[in-house]
Image (cartoon, rainbow, N blue to C red; front, side, top):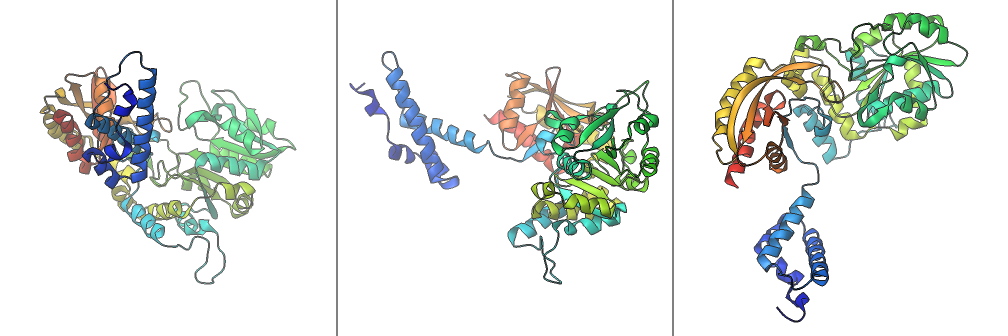
Amino acid sequence: MSLNPLRNIPSVSELLENPKLKGLVDRISHNAVVDTVRTVLDEMRGEVQNAVGEKTLPNVAELAERIARRVMETESLGLRPVINATGILLHTGLGRAPLAEESIAEMNAVARDYASLEIDLAGGKRSRRSLAVEPLLKELTGCEAALVVNNNAGATMLVLAALGWGKEVIVSRGQLIEIGGSFRLPDVMALSGAILREVGTTNKTHLADYASAIGEQTAALMLVHPSNYLVQGFAESVELPALVELGKKHRLPVIHDIGSGALIDFAQFGLPGEPMAKQSLADGADVVLFSGDKLIGGPQCGIILGRKAAIEKIQKHPFARALRVDKLTLAALAATLRLYRDEEKAKLDVPLLRLLGTSPENLKNRAERLAPQIAAVKKAVAAAEAVQDITYLGGGSIPTQQLCTWCIAVTPAGMTVDRLAAVLRAGTPAVVGRIRQDRLLLDLRSVFPRQDVDLVAAVEALGAE
């Protein structure tokens, strides 16, 4: 080793000539690779200077390999396609509902060129962006008017701010839910400027509780569908029609937050109890709000429906501009809504509904066909078998709705099940399953048939390493 070991560290230009890094320069970016080379070389200089005694330096090829791994790790931090083998159809971490092909095509069309986002092409005057979907929402739900914002939490805050600022909104104590990310309804109400007035108890709320709380400071009555938990046993709540009658008597609007929302009856999939927007409006709710990316199977957004006077007031609130959606969201939502004009077509073309409609027999046949192919990867798999199981429609959003499913239960060879799961997550394509009793379950309820080949290929790649 020379008297100055730092002289043995290769230069940036020398490393960039290595085939490993040359290929990355072409695929990714010259600047990105150079920045990583300089970072790694600076780290190495620090290691040499702080070393006690002599330090063995990697050769150019070894150093290029280390840099290449660093570059790829950095690149993999962005959004990547994933095969969802968790079985959870509305998985928040994996983007909830996948979009229909029609929605993707519509987004592509308006993304490539300019779009009539806020202009009336017939008259040439400025228009409202929600008009891109309002006629469809009127047609499908019977609402008088509609507004779309960035998500349902935003919709809740906007509605409360517009209708309840500085006044009381009465809500059952048993419906003060916490949604994803520790975002609690009382916190949303506080941010909106409305004053929360809790009535009833955790398990029981009567109509008389609402009635006795109404006073001069009351702005609205609110009913919240607790889609992420279930109270059973000695429990009672007020139904929407009864609350509407009370609201009419006192000339108070009734807000119905139905959470995940639905445009069709999910009881046909064995999932009863999910409120439909159309029924909520028919029952007399003045304002109905719900998510677009859950049971509808569209893009992330919050949909606000209701009486024209109420929606117009909500649209004029300053929060409406802060929470508005872009042209891509509106295009995807419009395309999704068009599919619901024909329920049978929607069940075929909306990916969420198609996955829900897949029979257990179909899943069993696929699992029994794929299990031997995965078991054949002897280097990484000790055993693989088709097993029946239970999964859920949602994780944090609708965790009470159970679904029958079939999985491929994989027992790893030469590694722990945690390691197997981690390697599959890091692969291309990335595969996310669930671990149970030292086996990795690849649940086909949330895997599209077109992904079966890729699922097997992802496991086979482990055997090639």
